Image 1 (cartoon, helix red, strand yellow):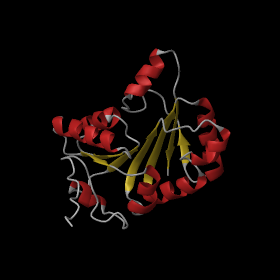
Image 2 (cartoon, rainbow, N blue to C red):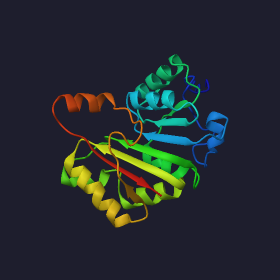
Image 3 (cartoon, rainbow, N blue to C red):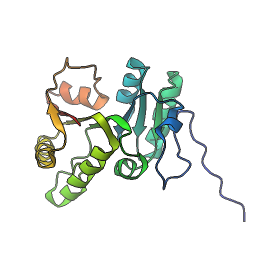
Image 4 (tube, rainbow, N blue to C red):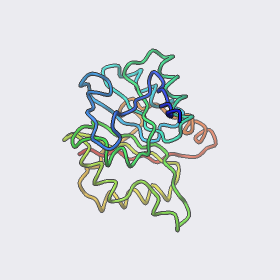
Length: 202
C-alpha cells in the first residue's frame, strides 16, 4: 500500500514536529524576539498589519480551518514577512498543550464565536480552565487583549475575569497603542454597531 503523503506546509505556515509535546518558541521563528499569538486569526488582516508595524516582534496566528490558514500564510509570504506564521490547530489546545509556561508576551482573542444560545455557553472559549492555561502561558508581564461585537459575551468575559482575579485590567482607549481593526470590525462599525474590548496584564 502506498504511504500517505504528508501535506506540505505553506512558506509561512508553522507545523510542529510533535503535536503532543511542548514547543520551543525559538523554533517557530528561529529567534527569541517577543511573541504575540492571535487566536482564531480569520482572514489574517489584523495579524499581518501587526507584523508589519512591529518587525522586531514575532506573530503567530492560530486558525483551525485549513483554507483560512493557507490563505493567511500566502498573504504573509506575499508581504515578505519573516516575523509572521500561521498554525492550523484548535485555539484552546495550542494554549493548553503546546506553549510552555511563561512563553507568550501578548495574546489576542478577537471576535471569537459567542455561542449565543444558553445551552451552548459551555462551548465559549473564555472559561476558568482556559484562563488558567492562559495565565500559565503568559510571561510575567504578559498581556491579554479581547474584543467582541456581542454585548452578552462581553459581560460573560467580564464576569469570568472578575472571578479569575489573577490578571489586572488596564484602561484601553483607541489611542493607547497601535491596534488595527479587522475587516469584520470595520464592517460592523460601518453598520453603526460598536465593539467591546478588554485589556489585561499579568
